[in-house]
Length: 499
Image (cartoon, rainbow, N blue to C red):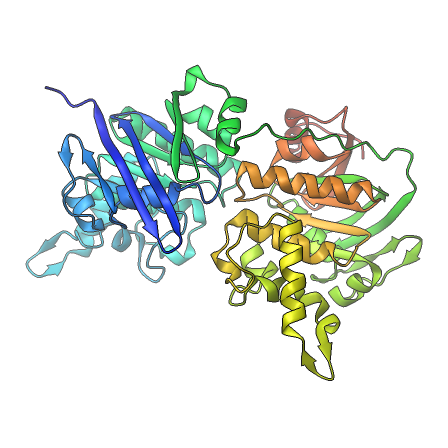
């Protein structure tokens, strides 16, 4: 009899010290379909995927793959015996080796004991061709963009004849264009019979790709539907256990001018000018090469400017260094929070207090008890989910890390908040909480500038959206004028707009 389920999991339990990561999860993955698994950070998705890929062993429960029970929970066994492959969020590749060497690592074609490089390149080119990929098998992986590296990992899975492909947050660091390329690839794989398990925070992606959606919360599977029989709102409510808050920010049309920027130029943009009102949220949209990514860092003095002036609250501010910007009342949250926004080897308390150490220092000695007590208070206020403030900040989910960074800056009561990709890699519940923090700030008259590749986010939270193209600000749209198609037309040059 034909097996209709690719994976069947029954009563899975996984415990760690002090926490039950999975609590009796039972679900199935239909063969040849795309099944999405969604949930907030900490819901148990990664633990579940780790079990299905053999990275973890369940404490209780069983897993069957195409009807055969899994006896050995080990990556090699799941891949070679059951043909289940995982594409993790952090791509595990050997950067100093070629594409062909990475694709065929461990299954190199050879004549005798020595692998045949010519045959490796031929076989890798064949696999990449099946994916409609134009990557040169002879290129070093280190020279590839992230989207191409992802295709290399998928080709590596196909080289081992995988039947089930699990992707964990595959679009977290991809541009919209790169994401569309990945979606087209996944649809081709599904059409060829591959079963796909797709883990994502991005609900529109789920409804674009998946045949079925499974929702996890607090280590349990709370519901599962055929995608066609549910709605995004219903999925979000199941994920977070409540409705999302409404964005009720009032436009700042009658507020005074908070910030004036005139003729600002940097390495990738030139002659950018705009005003920002008190309590206003101004969005910055544009393609990756538009200069958008460098603009806010330049305003903050973290990146060199080659000209221009800035006034904040009627006073000229020298765009020379972050120290000057902080003294003037600016705050800056960079897009790369792990690399630039956090002290990743330090704990939560240190990260929360780093900008205010003088408050906790007396005669050269840090009053650690006072520092940690205040850090715990701030973490509670901003609803950071943590074990204790001595926990490493790197152990937190992306959303909780972002809340730590925002809490750090908000303690300084800034006048101007500069945010790059504020909710990238953040689950829908944490994203909603971050929006509530922004509303709190704007309600006090703080001006916010948000640079984001997430157009629905900009359209939801911004009073106006400035569009950049090829280093210039080409248009500024009101909330009533702005729409995704119009913004993209301006960003690509398909349609001219008046700044």
